[in-house]
Length: 533
Image (cartoon, rainbow, N blue to C red; front, side, top):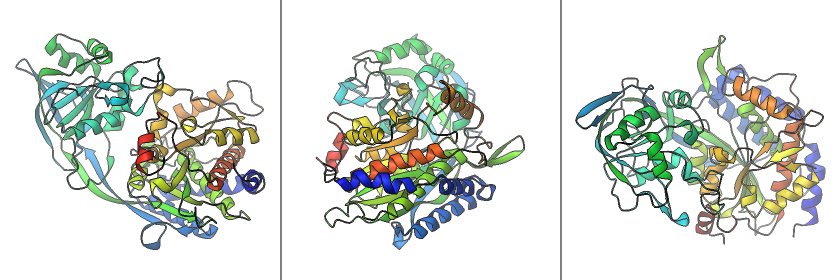
């Protein structure tokens, strides 16, 4: 049972959440003065100083290193050089591959030079999932080898087998590299196809030809000499060594009982990189709870502060301001923090407000926090993440993908009813969006976590309006210099999402029960390992 306070306070204190204050945060954080909030840049430092100052003004206590609002995040920038080479030797014939045309990738050793000289093994989708009875690495030793594989996972219509149509983490390319490294492979090469990746080669080309931010490796951590991709056409040439095409090999990978296949292919490569050490930081502030029995536990609200900084000019503009992505999320979390502090009676649990770095570089700041938390995972009740909100008015629906997998789901449903919001299912479960935002790093540590996002049904607008403007933003402004603040923007939808998240967080903070993942969920073992059962 949730006490009467938790039912009443959101309707009172949450009503004080104001669009004007969110607007002010968004306007400043996305101004040219902050130069796109790039990681390791002056603009990024200004953004974190601003957020810390706002937390101090609210009255939050520092939750970072040495009594500060900052948690140091040591990163390594690895920029692959165009002189990178990769050659496949097939039946005695050399096949030189062209950088960014045939292959893309980089070293994960964080060294300026890395070489490769190893035989290849095809490992299907590169998945070891005992809960699904699937092991692509069964009976094969890949230490020192090049593993060749496809991203995604075996097709399924069964919710109990790789979650049917929805992508699990086993299907993400990040998992493929992690598993290959754990098994001691020298390199991992993904054969790209648009259906398995859910995007074209142009995305691989643009993403893998630039600097990659990595969390600094701890001594002894296994790392791939090369992690990369080849085109499906290059895959055809590689698989021709055993008389197969990429399409035929993908069918084999999808087949139950698949076993790894050694390939008569030898790879040699040289992967020079420009490497730099980067000191970035997360920003953390906490508002303590009121109950001594629960104040060491917390509800966490997260948003990433970083964007792309200064880059290639588009129509003469080189500053990638990141107004929607994600000055909006930062503004919302700051306003939630202010409203939380204004509560006449604080809830049992504390509230931690976490602004993470390097989301655009692979959730690195959230990953680092999850490994070095201020509040241990077993004492963290919930993470609510806020990432990219559209300034086009109020929606009558909300997306909370992943909430249904947690015991917080009844709270989410109740709060949605209070705010007259319908809950929209994930419109593209096959894309695996749950694994692409900062909450995922905390979920891997066992914390019940999900993002709150606006739906597509805008109040007072015709059907299809939301899909149309989202498509326009994604095609014209996403990760472009044109993602800029506009004085005409309507912040009413952000106010609604802030109030919705505030109410969920408050209900959980006041509850005596510790949330967890539902039975059978992929993150439940991590939750139990953290001490929550």
